[in-house]
Length: 504
Image (tube, rainbow, N blue to C red):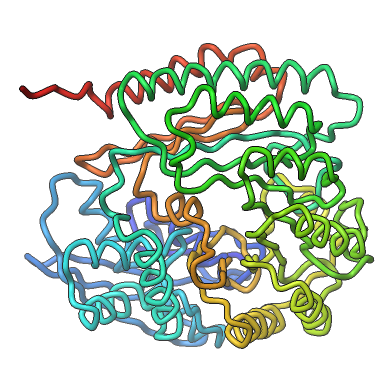
């Protein structure tokens, strides 16, 4: 679809309007221009916005068929022009969304929201002491979010505050993300730092030497500055792709270098690929008191696993789950993905039925997202996926199944180009929620990323502003510069956590 917007002078509108157009059409070219353009083969809209003192007035008109939308919103003077433009952008987005909804007959349940963390909006209201009914009305009016999605946001925020009552007060601590960039094979939908481990033992050894250095130096700084750790998360890649001996040395380093690991609230290790799980690795996890792991089937259909490049069978997933239970893993998460190639309602019903036989402590239901650099996106014609209506039906089945089986939603995020404009939702048995997932999604605390491709988020205590810093994604670049990246991250931390002044 080719969409032309007449009447807007500021090119900054182009990106947010493009994101909204993408909610309706898979391939959209959108152009913002001041000059009138004839319709031809394009969808042409006239959009105008004016300000009168403390009000913004926007109108949108589509000539063929003739559709009109209007929006008046309050204008509040802000400290920066950038903050003021957000109000203009939101008002224009309203009328553009309204026209496209009327034109296509598709209702966007998340309204004009295209960001990935909707629940942050609800938290912001809670932190400011806004009454629940007023918060709901604001989200509905300002962003056009439906009651169904606001209900989901409310349930998640309530659950998060139950699990972490001091969620708004943990800025003085940090969480740690440790990235292991190796997997048995690379999945077709994946853009995470993940390199097939076969034949790369030299790179693995060099990488782990750099990672140990990062842990040592970061731990030294945390101890010197008296900064506690809330959670530690080993992700990737697949952290269990390395050997049991390498895992053992890594966890030993964690305990030796980081402050007071025994009192860290949660340590999680992703073991997402069942083909990396073995009895000796499970014994190492148990040795270091780690019992929260992820074993991810993604699908319980062998043909699907083969199509997406996962070199394990459904039966192996089931066998490794039982093996983990036998070795004392008491908090297991399993991921399912809605909309994988050639999967529809019957396949997700089957996956849910198989999951019920295992009853893990938590289930994360992802919706397939066409990530820009993934093999699936680059060769999209090879992969037949569900349409919007079927994807929504599958999500509804997953929501119903989780409720019937005692799971509650506790975190949510969205992605660009997500199938059906849906969301990813983490469900857990009450009390088994991942604290790290809550903290990273709500961006309430600095997270230090160590390892290949690991992203750090430094959060300023006073302003709430976020500075991101990412280690390189490929092991070679990481190995060449890990000392430099470590020192730069510690410099960021120095600015956020000044030395504590002792009082007499």
